[in-house]
Image 1 (cartoon, rainbow, N blue to C red):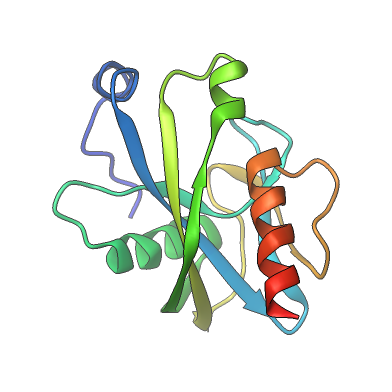
Image 2 (image 1 turned 60 degrees about the vertical axis):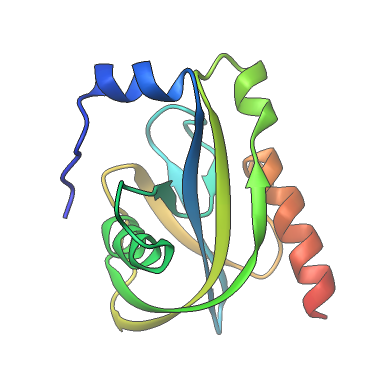
Length: 148
C-alpha cells in the first residue's frame, strides 16, 4: 500500500506553495499511545504520531486507515476527531511546506504493531517521551490532560 501518486519533485513543487492536509493517528492501547521513531527526514530520530498526506479524493477516515496500515501494520477503527496540529517548527527547520494534521482517535482491530518504511521503532507510551516532535508533544499533552 505504499504507492505515491506524485513524484518527489511534484510533491515538493506543490507543497512548497500550499498547506498540506495530513491525518494523525492517535492509537491508544492498554500500554499507551502508539508512536514511531522517524528514520527519514524531516524530524529524523524523533518520536511522532503516525501520519500522512491525505490523497486527492480520499476521505479523512480512509486516510487514517491507510496510514495506520502503512506505518504500523495494523487495521484500525477510526474514532473521534480530536483536533488539529499545525507545524510551524518544520518551517523554521527548513522544511518546505506547511503541514496541517487532523488528529483522529483510532482503535487497533487487527494485525500486529510493526514499523513501516519511515520508522525504525514503534513504542507505546503512557507519557510523551523526550524527543517527540514539538507540536505533537504539545498536542498530546493537551489531549491527555483533557482525557483525565
